[in-house]
Structure formats: C-alpha cells, structure tokens
Length: 172
Image (cartoon, rainbow, N blue to C red; front, side, top):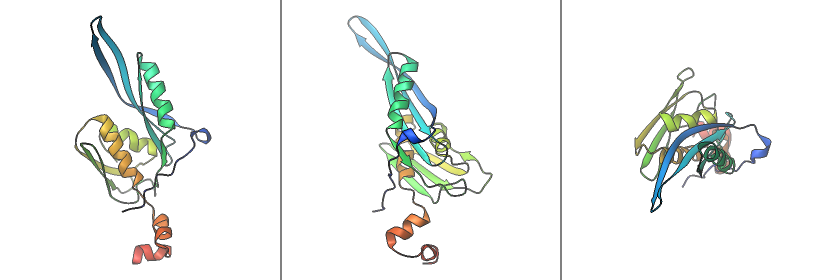
C-alpha cells in the first residue's frame, strides 16, 4: 500500500483563489409548494501545490458559494509539482468516477475536462494529460481527482520512505 501524501495545511498562512466547479438548483416539494435551494461545489488553491474542495448549500447562490469556499479551506492538501507537471502517472477513484492523470511535456497545457480542469489549475499544474472515465458527476470527478493527487509522491519522499539515497530511486 502506497504511503498517502495527505499533509494538512493551515489556510490562514496562504493566499487562496477559489473556482466554482458546479452549481445545482435543488427543488424540495412540500405540501405548501416547491422550495428551491442551491448546491455549489468549489475548489480553492494557491496555484503552487496546495488545493482543497468544498460543498456549500444555501437558499441563495452567493451564500452557497461562500459556504463552499469555507468548507474547501478546511480540506487542504499539499501536492508535489515538478517542473509545472505532476511527478508520475496516477489513477484516482471515487464512487463511479475513475480519473487518470499523466505528466506532460512543457507547453502541452492542461488537457482535462471541466471538473478536473478546475482542480488541476488550482493546484498549479501547467502541463498534464487527464482522462475521466466512468461517471461524469462533478462531485465524484472532483473527489476522484483529489484521490489521485493525494497519492502523488515526489522522488525525495520515496527515497525517505525506503531509506535509500535519491539516486537509487531512479537507478534501482
């Protein structure tokens, strides 16, 4: 089992930008009629390896987004980035969504669909190839992308865990 890279980060020390991934109008039917509310999924990140996601629900769109941002700041993780891309290929899974992330050469850009693109741009990845398989539900895709990103490890971390020199990781 791979050592997971879920290192929690305090949101107070960093400048975070938020991105709205998806917003849904939800209807609850009661005997008095229909009650509308909004559900928003938001991704925040500093575009330098720190990212988080959150879900906000409220009667108004702005309140739902604000709640989502607050929730996202509580779930921040640190992701290793190497030369503007990810260190290695990785699969991520959540519920029915399966995502595949692959490092790309400089100048490629972020080749990813809607929900995944928001997460990868918030992390600060500039070159990556990504494929979403299975469910296209934005909630599941965002969580699957986070699963893949949390499994990312750089060579230095691998060397530390194995207790070997950095050169041995590449040559051995």
